[in-house]
Length: 268
Image (cartoon, rainbow, N blue to C red):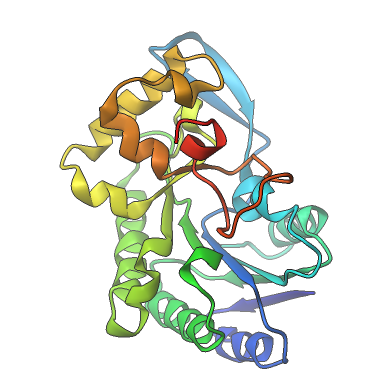
């Protein structure tokens, strides 16, 4: 079932979803994952010619590892973004439905992450997740608000605001159990374009942005399955906390929502 809401209706819609008697086993929430364009053009010093890659928006909305869950696993997909009325909303709605499975409910929330109500909306969602006793291993909130080129002032503020807002909620006393459920997209870096990382690892590296660039370069030099070819220990924490949105885990027994690439490619 698909629900939609905005900053004036989200309270009633969220209450309806969580009070209709269904117990969710997994909840995945994305911020900034909507479909904007068909392809992405990459330019970098690693590639003398531009490389065109299909957008991964549908995997940001619903990662591949959720599309193969058992049919008795109830999943709630929450997507928060700014949708223009008409074609933009309708296309993203149809894309979501086309990638969903029968055991999924979908909530599309039309809201700017810079809106003051964004924190309240996240708080309400986390409150219901806590009431349903969803374990941290069964909840993910992923931020995909990144800009390909140098962002303007408004774009830069949006990138900062969404992270601050999510952490404000997760750092509160009531929700600290879910603090490690916050993930971020690596952004427009060709070799790690489909990867997300656990936000907490950035807290232990003062030069995290530089480390990410080096990580991307290291993967570029390695042949797939690349993880087992990366020898530098400085990337161990990143490998153990990086996840591929496009991989399915059909034949792997696991309790978590997803597995890090270090496990998928056999380095741990």
